[in-house]
Image (cartoon, rainbow, N blue to C red):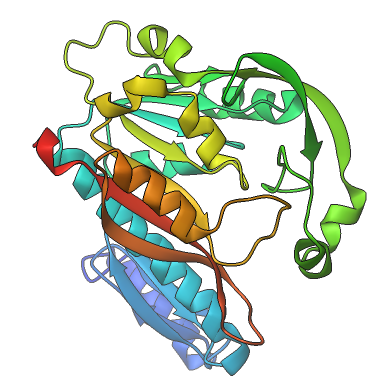
Length: 290
């Protein structure tokens, strides 16, 4: 994708026209961008904010298109919610290498971000990602029900978990077979909250959790202070990828009991063969905080 458009310099426009004569597809998008491709079997679906899905038009690509669209819609919704509820601090629990925080910045959130990631080599990548952002802070902990040293199953990608894989998870994700154990530090959320919110006059915090089946444990460590959060985001499961992970109805019931109400549900992963959704990103808010 090139950053040019209808007002591009004449010489560059002539070059693009020349490409068309060579059977190269040149498609203008919004002002400032075009798609240049030797392939013709695709369509461009605009998502807004300078984002598009380039769809190759084959049936086996539909799942990937759907995932990209859902990720965009979820990000738009979350950042809008953060603005509406005047959130000054997002706690990013299970941050991995900072994908979520970087997405918040791309979509316009400018408040404080506090990321938690316990696996040391991943934490270092996260620190590198946050290095040039003065209001993005990194803590090398998992969050849980009590302060302790524990073991995490380190899995390639973003699937490391305090829990072991279920039979279903092992069948679906071959990477579980190459996992290893590593010692990490676990901390309670309520014991860290004063420190991470220090310096903010009216933080109105938002809690995002993506801990691969451990969200309710991270949430429990907030104790009574979970009521200070104006909203939360939790990955809730319909299919148990990890042993002992709570199902969606159990997790949502816990959050609702504390006054959080659903504002959006977005599929995260689904089976390509059956179409079944495995997990949703559940976005919630406390209406009384408005």
